[in-house]
Image (cartoon, rainbow, N blue to C red; front, side, top):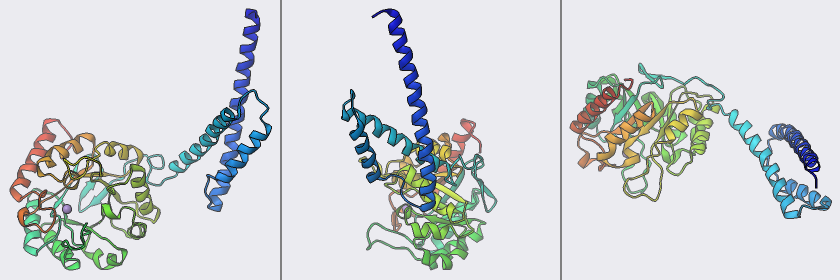
Length: 361
Ligand SMILES: [Mn+2]
């Protein structure tokens, strides 16, 4: 074979490549049209029966020299690429996504602007246990000029025999303590049926990790006009977390704070594994503020400070941690809450850290 023949054949291959390219793009355009129709009909885009039909048709017409296995493989990749493309289109459409809204969502609570680039803090006891307990913590938080307090009144616990919280009475105690020190209340709701009674005592409604995919609850908090703090489920992927937030925004409430709180892994040294890289991913993928709960992610008092530093350094909009006047007698999470003196030291260390590295405060 002469050099000239080889050149001619290569030119032919180039031309065929361009034909294939043009054809698979034409195919992709048709698939997009089909996707739009399916979206209107509300039917699933992936249809295994249809795929089987297409593969059979190709088999009937394959006269070689490529063997059927290779043809199947190539076409399955083409089928998949069209599906991936449609999924990408769908992702673009998410209301919580950066693609939909490029500016950061800023949530103003009690004068505190969350998501504006300086870290906010939510401190408070795991559970509301008494008026005296929450008032002591509120005083310590207010004394630092902070604006938010947390405390669980409805406690979803792993065991049904563990302390379940004081319910509405607990919320009233927390609200009274908060008002005394000009704080806003962050507290968890576990069922839509509690929402109406609890709402007057709440400034931010928390949806806890165990309820991240409680879709009826997500829809219910999507219909209120107060901010929602949504915690990541302990076995939820980032994608599932984002979609949980989408339930809230799709129901009408765009005031959502995402909270990374650790995920379950094989590691036993910490209560959960703090997925610190979730913070920049969530910041890139969504326009929502992102908090890090250092208490439940680590489950260790000695890690609350380094984990908070990591959170701030990586770009979190805030840190949440548990504070109790006497953690040793706490009815829940006794091992990981800070006492008031530890809280003072903790907050001072964090402020020093931020100054030292010239982080925005
Ligand atoms: Mn707790």
